[in-house]
Amino acid sequence: MVYPGREAEFVVVRTYWDFVDYILAHGLPYFISFDNDLGLDENGSAD
Image 1 (cartoon, one colour):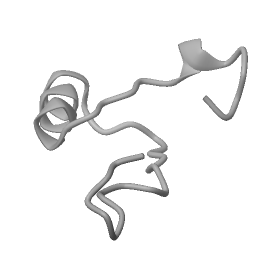
Image 2 (cartoon, helix red, strand yellow):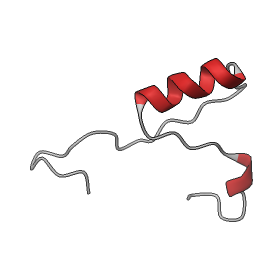
Image 3 (cartoon, helix red, strand yellow):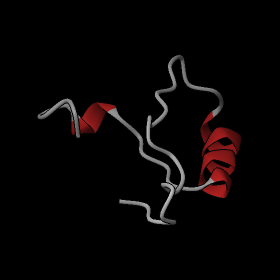
Image 4 (cartoon, one colour):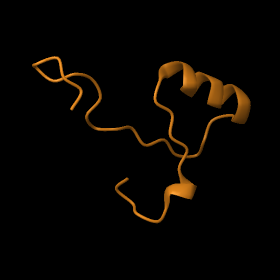
């Protein structure tokens, strides 16, 4: 995590459906932070 010690302030969802489930259960958050390296690289790796 980029913000050490602040993990309790974030909700992490890893898939689209986890995101949908969260929104349906809790409503839209005030802020959303997206990962900057989503997807696979040119070699098909998620590293």
